[in-house]
Image 1 (cartoon, rainbow, N blue to C red):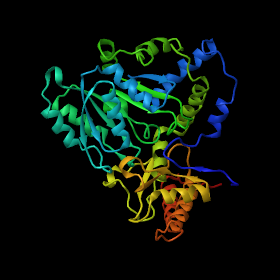
Image 2 (cartoon, one colour; image 1 turned 90 degrees about the vertical axis):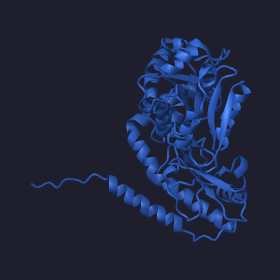
Image 3 (spheres, rainbow, N blue to C red; image 1 turned 180 degrees about the horizontal axis):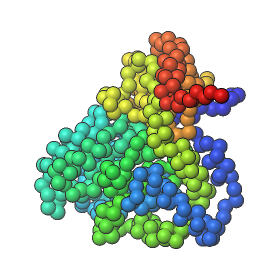
Image 4 (cartoon, rainbow, N blue to C red; image 1 turned 90 degrees about the horizontal axis):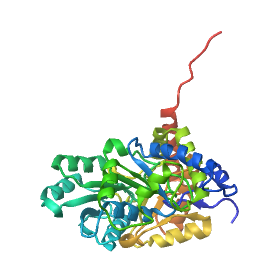
Length: 396
């Protein structure tokens, strides 16, 4: 097809030209002074994206799945108990990863479309018996990529504080970091993990963690047997700008440029942009039940009864070169997901909405063509006018 393809899945996201150019260079010696200086300057700036001054940034050549494993094996041992909440495909897999490592998981079933209820967190923590069998960690997915639901991490931390529970708070921010407000230090998160391919605007291939002092202490006194995933070795080598393994060199140059772009725009402005571009336009059902928990980085659209969401996606892909996110797990065939995160602006969202409308109409959904696009246009104009700075009048 002519024209550019529209990649509007909830990650990997589109890689900006600036980041592509930063990676389009010869590979350099990862033990050279040039590389070491770049890494030493980069890591504190990455910590700013996590909004942390006390945490240590740890990078692995891996996907977000590797970040799950790193967060678990460094802080927990086989037989330790953790509390998790099943409210989507990725929270399910996070709990499964823990079980595969010999960790005992108390997995609370929730509706897919529901956020993690703080009152239920508090109830489970109060009921915990304490002693050596007490929960060692609480696992939370901040923004569930399979359902488009954002859970309130602040409220989870308050539940820990209210009950006086000493469990670590481990938070997956794969589809929220650098797209939605997240404050590691202020919210007192012990381990934050993410991947490179979403809000950080990079290709897949890098797992990023920010590790707080309590989690580092836990890893130094316990955890599981580990080698490659041992973040203490990485933190020690990073102090001189190097790694105990061969790093993803070109991805690091891309990360340097991506973080520069985020800090140039300003993180608060990045978050405001994502909030402004998150438009629910058609009157179709959003899988997220609570409007206060609707994600700013993706939307999970429920297709009407009798319409297979796979048919909508097939039409979008084959006829308009528009890639949408598939429904995962128990919502396969029932929803499609629109990613609106990373390097994105109003015109790209309008193009996406127009393509989705055409695909919906061709799949048999009763929809007024142009209605969603017009609604988004009105929202975008109002949003731009709200943030515009008036120009002061001058006289001569």
